Amino acid sequence: MPFTPFHLGPSLLIGLIFFPLLYLPAILSGSVIVDLEPLSFLLLDLPVLHLFFHTFLGATISALILAFFVYLLRGFLGEIMTAFQLPQIASPLNITFAALLGAYSHILLDAFLYPEMQPFWPLLGNPFLGLVSSSTVYLFCILCFVVAIPVYIFQIWRIKKQTKK
View 1: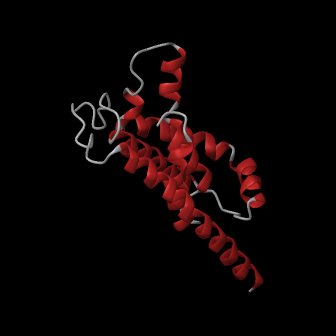
View 2: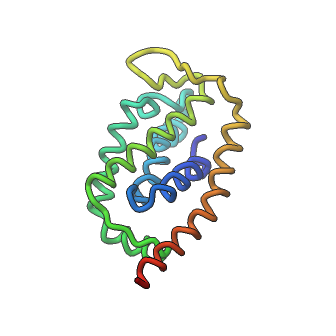
């Protein structure tokens, strides 16, 4: 799913369900960061889109780098979170775990779709390929986004209720 917002649905839902344990900007950006790889391959007109960063090892590296930058930007991101009525404390642990979870969810979702992926590289093969149809994966992502909307409303209500105490 290169350059699509589909990955945001599952990561948004997970981030909101486990809010404030997971730093929401980290899980959301973690779920799309690995698509810089296919973007660069498309720009270079290369025939393959999903290589190293579409493995769990590559996703781990990209998520750890992302976590570092999210931590540096936590003040700015905190202002955005407050604007969305979801103020959140950013710690190195909740940022890193969220970035990893977002990146891993991306790899897992894409592994169902793309034959060139080797998610467990250096082990070869893709045990997920074809287990679920592409339409099912896309529908799952859309449904996660739809379900995330009432969860978002609930979290705002919960936060407001806590602050009134």
